[in-house]
Length: 133
Image (cartoon, rainbow, N blue to C red; front, side):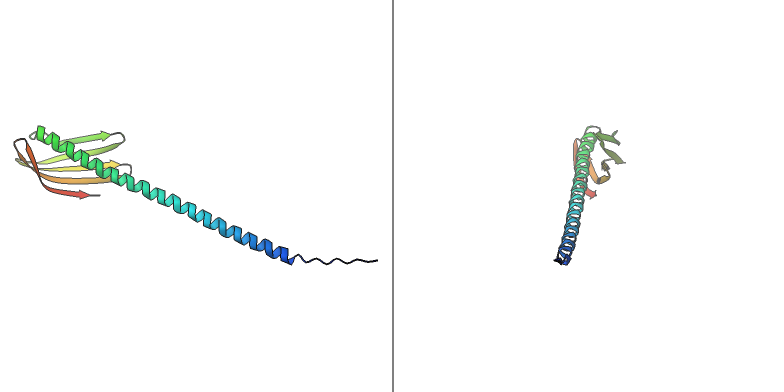
């Protein structure tokens, strides 16, 4: 008595190839989605730092105008630090006309504001305001 068993492994091999291809495609999609998420988070962080630089420059301009109102003949600017962030305040001009320049730095981002002001006793009038970011 002789028995012959014939088995075909081709259908199993085909199924294995399909599973490997689907697994590789799923892995590619997962990695791509992860990289996209990291990129979006990085962009959000950069946007936040840019906004912070702008807000810091605006606050430093307020400080410079207050100092100029208090001591218009002697105030020429300086450096203002808030935590690890900073502003450079510069006042130029003479007489009743001054130009106030502010440059703020937050991380790798900076913002600048320039304002022309007119001094009249203890009143300051901003005649021109320019922002660069």
